[in-house]
Length: 276
Image 1 (tube, helix red, strand yellow):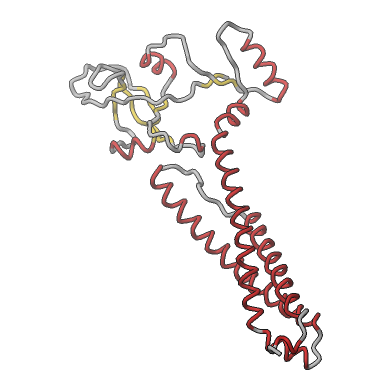
Image 2 (tube, rainbow, N blue to C red; image 1 turned 90 degrees about the vertical axis):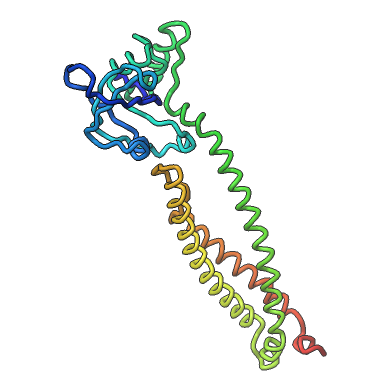
């Protein structure tokens, strides 16, 4: 099965009242962004021409095409029009030639066999598997993803240090309460457990609030950039896996920091906590 990918075309619209009667016009599918910008509707009659104002083929809009969820197409401002193969050949003047075509195969063995056959068909042919093209076109996004991952790791480490300092200050402010508890016979283990429990509770509340805030910001980012680029692509996503990682990481850091802060305090003699 051959498939000719849609090509960005210049659509020249002109009045057809003065044109001589011809056979029933063919149909085309128009980019929905072009329809919005040019005020086109289903059933409108256009003239496809290689240049504005030139003679061309009369066509009728039968469908609108929405942009795919391909990140490589986000920044492209060109419009796309899908039309019949013979009309495309006449419009671009290629005759029986094409720049690219796609062949659908079944299974990995069929794909490899088709690649070898096409490469050996004639000089200048070069066949690529769709997965190779996807990997090549996604290289930039992989670099951005790794950059974001590095920023995330640095942020987590910095926030852990900051959280430790805050917990140390907060626990140190309660040194008199801890000293009183120790003098009353409360064991150091019980005090450490209470501080860890409090830290875990605060971390759980903070993680829930963070997930909620992240989801709200993600929805706002998607709403804004989908309107800017007019694409259904998802720019920001908060999945269940991401939320679980955030909660687990928050609880782990909260418990670890609470333990270190409490341990530092209970190791000191009770009277020294009173400043004696």
